[in-house]
Length: 156
Image 1 (cartoon, rainbow, N blue to C red):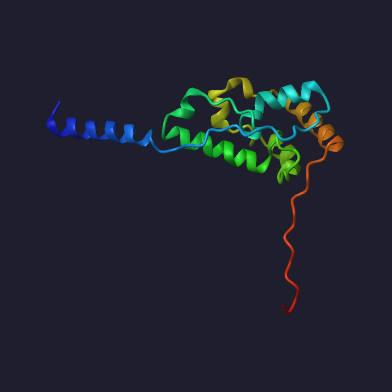
Image 2 (tube, rainbow, N blue to C red):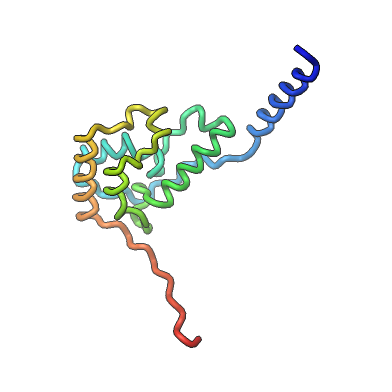
């Protein structure tokens, strides 16, 4: 190995090690109120395909502790919880009304999540069962609406 290649490789190793010290939030906040599920089957499907990003019960896999992948995983979880969190049903869940659309269009679960978690891949029948179950769940226990900011008075 040439000295230049050895130096370059050493630099990459040092950079990789240094990246591991960048803090990443992998916390699971307490469950404040879980949605009241219409059926245990719906909860089981949601837990299998959705909970790692859309609840406070994330199971953090080993690669969630290795930068730079850890940044992507933590970012997905943060985004997921912000948009829809089955563990914080006492707070606004802004995208609950979009669940059916993203499931039908195959946008969720994310392709890279399914790649590493094949158990999260839902069959067509499971997707339909989840959609129907979530409809019933949200009808019986609707999400807290997002607070609308007050518009300023005209002329003020």
